[in-house]
Image 1 (tube, rainbow, N blue to C red):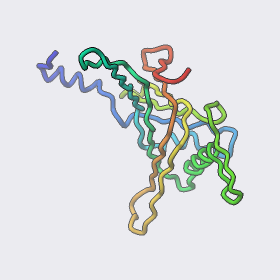
Image 2: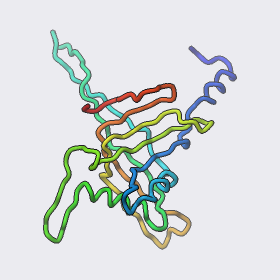
Image 3: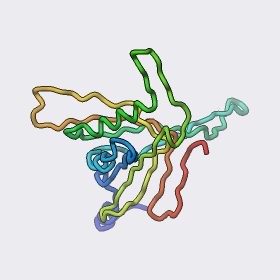
Image 4: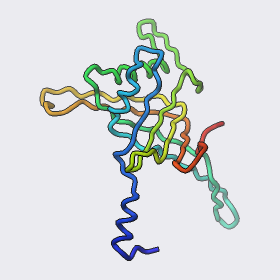
Length: 193
């Protein structure tokens, strides 16, 4: 259907989602030294994405060189957040502590402990909420079995006088679930359940 009137166009645009109306919820550190970071992370996470996924393609040879296409495995690419660094570096310390839980290496004794498999004690769930213009949550994504694979460097320089430090965190996760405003139950969009 073609839009023929300006009023139809403005009506359609008014309902568009805004990329700056979001919140990312940090893992719950209530029983650790990083308990106060949860709310702070929601305020200082200045950039993220709604996660994506790719459905693989399997081509099956058929008669006379034809190909029959089937859906393959769904994969979930790494997810990135941009964090404003607080003066006490609480969020960065919490993330480094979280990362250390998953691949703990004692460099002096040349030993390492790598945690494998996904359990509630090893991995966490991150939540991304998108809001509408009235401040109501329109959709919620939960990244299941999430953990930080990369915490970027922080550049220090005498030339940077009017800036606040930022760093990015790259997260790996198994799959995500979504809940849209009009749904009552979570829709699983992937995973090995």
